[in-house]
Length: 176
Image 1: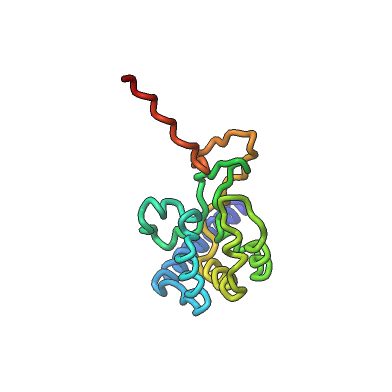
Image 2: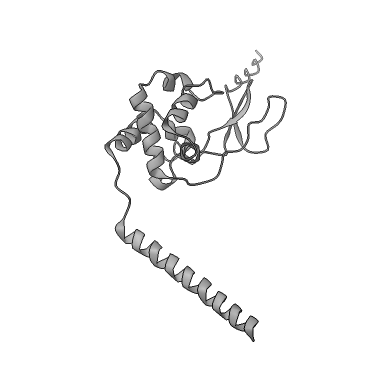
């Protein structure tokens, strides 16, 4: 009988916890999105004009930028393959959540594999890189980590873009 009572209490506690969680979620949905700081607003603007979404947001280029902001910067499983191997655009939202602003700046200014234009980040001001970091932190963690780098001598299992593209085949000469 004691075991039955204990199980009943445990089950009731789980149901109550689930209901409390659902109520808290409904309350946060009513409150709407969290306010964005001026620094994060600037980071959003910089990320847009710098083309960060082009690679780090799935489907962004193909949809002419019409991807819900909730899905921005979650990385992509489309690979970029070249002499360096195959790289994937990282999930910047997860990256930013695991770093301080200073760590993010160091990584952003490190030499990264192509096609990432790390030199553009290197040339940004500290305030600009920190603003992008603030925007990524504002967005919060979402999505999964990007696929792992694939060495040049290995064939990736996921779709990829050959970069740079091989030259087109020359048309066969026409006979006279």
